Image 1 (cartoon, one colour):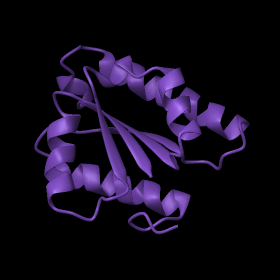
Image 2: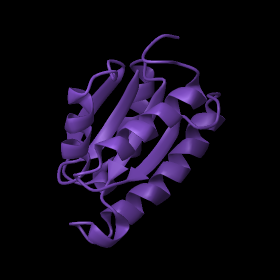
Image 3: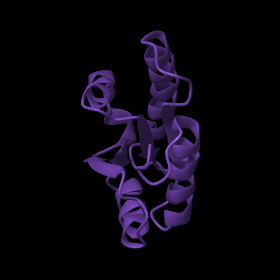
Length: 125
């Protein structure tokens, strides 16, 4: 299972379009007002609840509705990646992707890249 924390302005529309195309049964989308609002405890809770990877999906840096939300999220993703490695998980379990609402293929690619890292294919471990 891959949990995706998606910005309501860009991430959610892209994720929903990608989900409509199918093949993402192992993806859970959690809408957040801004990718920068995703807190450390939320990501760690996702892993405790069985997530194999967490993807933080925010606006393109130059189009962030909250000005610096995507920058904050990107820095936080790096710190969270280190945290989960310290907890014993392999590298690549937390990632950040910047996209626009009309980029479902970019969302799909990010999910596929995470699947490759965690060793699953469409939810098949």
